[in-house]
Image (cartoon, rainbow, N blue to C red; front, side):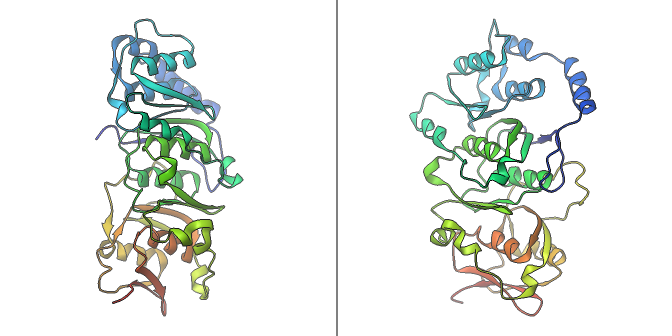
Length: 333
């Protein structure tokens, strides 16, 4: 798998946004000037993912590339000095179409017209709060969506989750500089080849849940109706931080570990019990339910459990709270 790492130039607490300070920017620039410039690199020939990463380091630019296209070679004898013109050159040199929208660039292959549909995806309907969160980040091609969302959650205090029909999709090479979270998510989803017809979302100020029509709760999820049901037990209002499959330090130094895929409920149950302070019981048929790596910030227990269980596409799997115990249920048993 190609470069699967996240570089995060801005670390914040909660939903606050704090720009990289001047000293940090100067240090970054000093290190970069010692390396080969982007203009030298494109003259010599390099893979598109390396070029995009380099552009993200050298310039305040935001670029999203469709997954799979990052392995195209870039070689330009006379690169333009203007960054916008250079990016247009790169798209032509790699036989890629270029969409310029919301102050970012989206590159996708010209060969297949189906990719044109990706350009229509828009997340402008997200709550205003998500336009106020500014993201600066980079992700390597092949990074799975759950790792991307968890990294944003960990760093920016969000609670973004996708159901199992989306969570393991790999994204393309991506660099984001000071873009609203709503725009960053739009770039991420496009790079993962997700067309508008195949994705829906339920978004409120304290969470975003992405799902597809394959989710059997689709009618309940429309308009967030299924999240509106208030818990009848006070314990469901308890605030928790969920970090699966392992607990991570809460000082937010460094980055969140990346994982390869889901783990069975039986394996993460002890961690979930420790983080919720409740006993976990699994009815027959629930032990092997897949739990994707998940990081949720200071969230009510009910919402955390909803976001975990709604990832399962089958509505016959759910949970209940009984006497300080979380019971995972397979209906019909």
